[in-house]
Length: 110
Length: 112
Image 1 (spheres, chains in turn orange, red):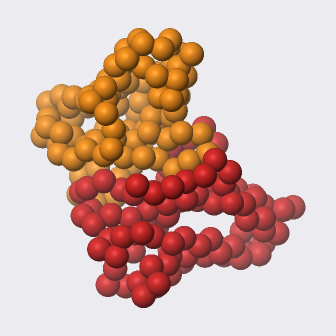
Image 2 (cartoon, one colour):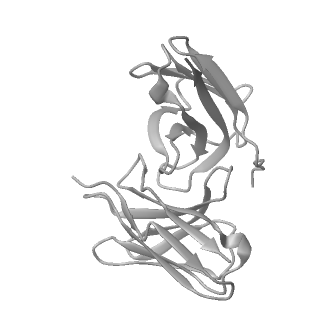
């Protein structure tokens, strides 16, 4: 049984560009959460998707948006990239309790 | 939100000794607590969790203690091994389906 998978592994973008990150949840999981982890810090909650709708959101600007598909996979979109958006972006899936994290996508904005 | 510095506190432990990692949580309404282990280049990995109606829970080589009076969590790792080297995060939430709030991480360094 594959765990949570994320793509791409690494990504380099230029300021002002847009980026889309992808996540496939663990089999049987219907809820996907996204986190941003800056270097040397703990993950910060961005938002959570359930039944294809955003259920809860953290303190992130509208430049951060997402989507969940009928197969429960999810995308994170970031528009107008800033240097400060450079971070590890983590996806976590869950069914009811424990959240399982993927390996993350390392985004570098230059 | 919580404030987390760029420089993680580090705990150095001799291989074979017990490790104790401490964490102060922020929300007195939190009712579910989790410890995660994060190795370099990987996402956080679940270690053990505890509900607010408990004060101790044991797993394989790990024990979590919860003191709600002072809003304090600790993770005890018995007979620390080289594979235990990682950053450890405590986390909390008020609803198991809601967002998880991560605390400050602690880097565990194992001495040979």
